[in-house]
Amino acid sequence: MSEYVKESERSISARMRQALKSFGLPRLIIALFLLLMFVLTPFAGSNLVSQITNVINRFSWNAVLVLAMVPMVHSGCGLNFGLPVGIIAGLLGATCAIEWGFTGPVTFWMAILIATPFALLFGAAYGWLLNKIKGGEMMIATYVGFSVVSFFCMMWLVLPFKKGDIAWGFEGTGLRTTFPLDKYYEGVLSNFLRVQIGRLVIPTGALLFFALLAILIWAFLHTKTGTAMTAVGSNPNFARASGINVDRIRLLSVVMSTWLAAVGILVYEQGFGFVQLYNAPFNMALPAVSAILIGGASANKASITNVIIGTILFQGIVTMTPTVMNGLINLDISEVLRMVVSNGMILYALTRKTEVSR
Image 1 (cartoon, one colour):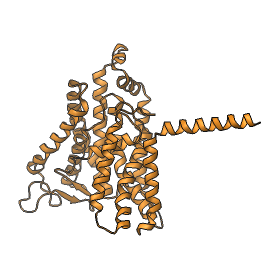
Image 2: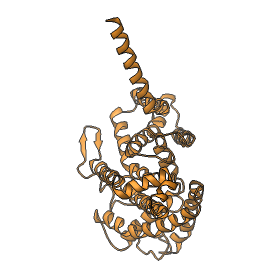
Image 3: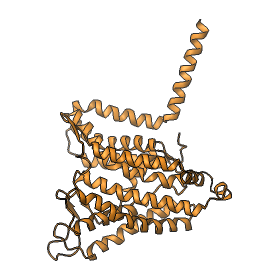
Image 4: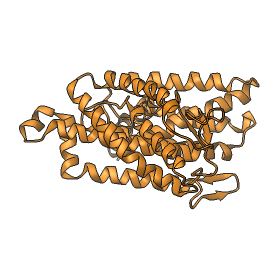
């Protein structure tokens, strides 16, 4: 009987070690730290339910941008540090939709429609470039993202936008740095089927929209083309020998990622309530890259689960830490703490880029 008990204990211990290895010790530490922040919230003078609402909201804003990483990772193009290329396409869709007179919720859907050809065009050019420099995709993508943002800092001033809500008031030309969306698509997803229980608010529409895109990406990766994409990312030489057009598959993954980034920034804007132009997209790739790495992805393997776990952990830490620490030490250093925590998380995540995903 004792031998049976010992064997059972060994079996349970082995399963626990395997579960810990599968989840990853670093992710477990981050998850426990986030849990600690929630436990300390009441002692910091904040409302726990309100903070949970903030984390859920930030997840719904950022999840699609993190999802945009998946296609390029699967095809072996690496982490999409050129995310601003797609973000610029989404910003063009938003500004054009407003300029052309659309109002209310329809502006959001028209912005997606208008952004799509820009995303396809920019994604095709971006993918063509990455196919020319195989092996250095992530480094080149970073500079591509920075270059596109810098180029559009000039274009936002010279493009012929005239609508008073978005153009500078002095000359009536050039776009403002920031403009609100209260007359357009603010909360178009977040307020759809929204559930409110006391202070707990769940942006059901935004979560369903992310779930729809996630299911579509998951389904695509299980098609013949999606399987080919995974094969290209795992072993391009074997894929080429099997008759797969490696360059075409890589190009498709970049276009998909660029389009998801364009949609993702529109989802972010409807929750945030503002459109930010010029230098705003500069560093938006780093939180998305960090989130998917913290979620357990590697430079050549990622899943929808990695997207969900990583976004919750990253956004949870970035949201909770300044609030809790601010309340505990009674100093207004929330922005400093936010920068320290977010950049620290980014630094940690980038050191994990070679870790094998489970």
